[in-house]
Image 1: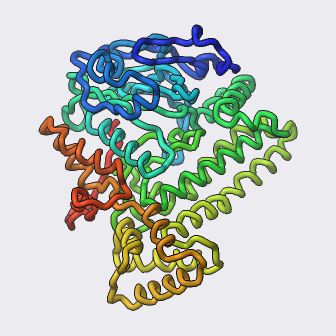
Image 2 (image 1 turned 180 degrees about the horizontal axis):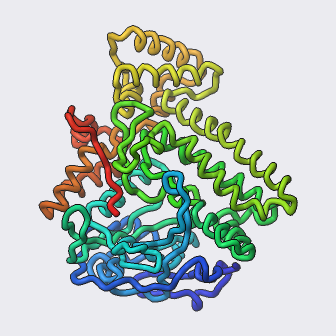
Image 3 (image 1 turned 90 degrees about the vertical axis):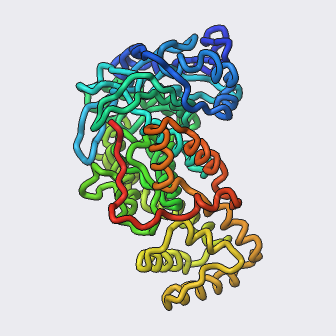
Length: 494
């Protein structure tokens, strides 16, 4: 496990800056299958993330202009990479299934100049042993969606996987229609999921489970290795990170759409941008995913679903928490029961910032909930309502309940020692002016896929890179969607 101590000569190094050190491939073979990407006919670079490439220590210019399209399509493998498909399981909409990377390959782990380790994964790179009759391919639209939303989330300060490139393949993909194929290159702290632990538990291999737990602690929570009970400390740390992550989702109106256990990263990053979307008018029952017919993953259900997923992680760790099963269960239950308090702390801390409350008062929970009730009752836009509170003349409303709330809020602001200027500055840092509005995302994707025009996508991407700024150029990007007779729906793209 002491891979950080290896000499550079033992790490795959290429002239374009790749430094691979592939520790995941040292886990028991049950966790992966070695696999090369399928060759594609005519790779072309659609989008390339120069800034991310440079932060990773890569030669962005050469990758953008020279051999990048071959690497990011899977036609060529960078020096030092060891492509593999990862095995995992998961509860999908509550039903347990053995899964795995059915259309993705982990090229390896790249070491950035600062020593940070990142998974480099191709998504849409062809069939694997886990494809389950799928074609292993991806369509251009969903890959551009992941690129756009993941980069927007990064700019918003939300822990997330990121996107390095999208390459078109020159080959069609059959879905409900014939679509242009593409491959996304995803960058992540790792792709270890709750579902990875579920897989280890399901194959009933105690040694493999312990190896995975030890590896994950070493990679993501190294300080916990010397804890009195490192596996319990690990469980509590994952619970804490997920509580913080979901609280951030709720503060910006983000709806993941498929919170299956295989889509919950142990690192605490947002992962797998399928039928995700952002809420316009506030409503905790908001669902956009076409496959979520029962609203399991509705906006307001995300906090308790995260706790449910974490309980599934705790189940897999029972053999490691204590030799006595009863004590192991008690430890796991206590850990899971700590989640609501942790989530509430992170959520309220963030909501206080959104309201410019720089100290704490017992009335704050009620103040937040009263505002949300007004927003729900009057169909108010979630993002714009909070942003307008940070102006010199916040929200004019003829509604008596909203007027009463504004008066209580102003009184609360006046009771704190911080200045009004400090409160407004905090609010403008916590409340974005622009988010990936669903109608604008769809317009950009439609232009890219149907008209081969990436200009709207690139313009939207540029606006979303500075989400807290208000400029004349982004005025049109701040407005909610015009009324429509049809409810907005998103699709997972598989």
